[in-house]
Length: 359
Image 1 (cartoon, rainbow, N blue to C red):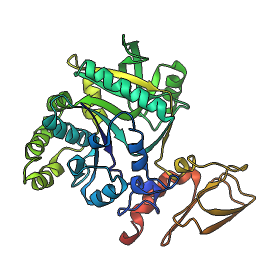
Image 2 (cartoon, helix red, strand yellow):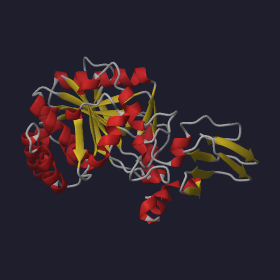
Image 3 (tube, one colour):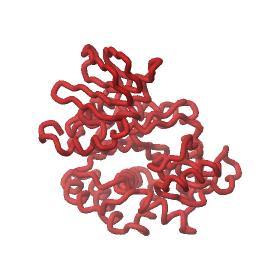
Image 4 (cartoon, rainbow, N blue to C red):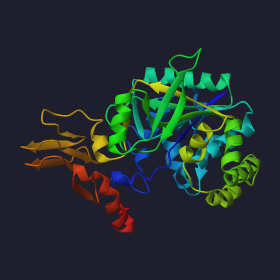
């Protein structure tokens, strides 16, 4: 049976001061009045029904996630006492689903992205499910067609086509965040995709592979699965999960599996518009620009300004900008950020330095 797990555990510090510990970016209704988590769930329409969708996020966000995703069933909530990176989020879902359904096949999706068009995404996700259903030992990753030589994304190289499937390939190798020269080579080659961070696994086979490559994680996840349908669930998760080694699914699972004859890796390219909404400039790209490249979600007055992004948690608030170029302005009721757009990555440093009540 098909399932999906949405990872929603990010802190979103590069989107401070709107994204806070109490309300991280994936729960903010700042994309046309919807949150990134809501949008991630909507992408599953027609592929995975609501009752088979799971969300993995920090336990202290349980109530807010349930409000954002009212169709989420309590048994499909995977609350992390503390974040232990993506391998354990994936393993958490695999362990719970393998116990529930020995033939469970599940997609791993993120709550950071805007992906359009929906029809293409759904079509390629369905093809990913078909690949794993035809061979449970196969791991599937989705590749995004590069549009520029990005150095902040991982890459996957496509190999030969897989017979019987629409535009699906065996993977040749994974490359983590190359330098500019190599990224330009990958873009020119035409056989590399950005690694989207989205996958499809057979739950039991995924858990088996975690046992090979990261046995300490597998042991803890097994204890959680054994307690999942007992009164000891909460206490077991609280005790075991923080002890799991912190490591990403790419390093701990996908890279070793790509060199292991017991597993095959398939790449499903997606011809989509893919935006990683992880900073204020990328959030600005979700908005329509004016003739001077200015964007915003509130009442704005511009005078001789270009490339300015303005965000506000109060749509009735007016922001006036005079004579500035390539600047970010973010207004909230208790904090305001102004920074050069090319320094937006440094916002996380400010977020960590402000008083605790503003973090």
